[in-house]
Amino acid sequence: QVQLVESGGGLVQPGGSLRLSCAASGTNFNIYNMGWYRQAPGNQRELVATITTGGSTNYADYVKGRFTISRDNAKNTVYLQMNSLKPEDTAVYYCHVRHIFSPDRNYWGKGTLVTVSS
Image (tube, rainbow, N blue to C red; front, side, top):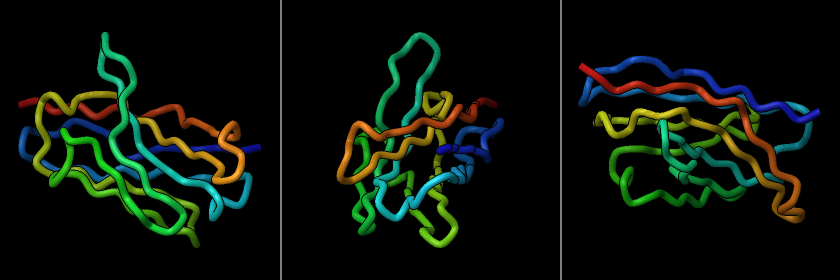
């Protein structure tokens, strides 16, 4: 059974940093692209960043230059380093993985809340 468990969320002041982690288990994640999405209250879920099995990354414009996605295949873990946080970054952040050969095989974590407030 595939499981994704996010951690690292919390309350941070504007301008601060957080590092999110997503630990994956239940299958070989070396053949999954991985990513982070977020959903603020009243908004739709939106892309934050993705990383392929080969390490290529993609970022939403609103986090470019501030967030960095990375993965450790040996640990089946994907990270999101978030710097220069803004109040508008407040959201529940979700980990997502998608099989590179079977896109319908994709899974979500339960999310971790990030609150940026003074």
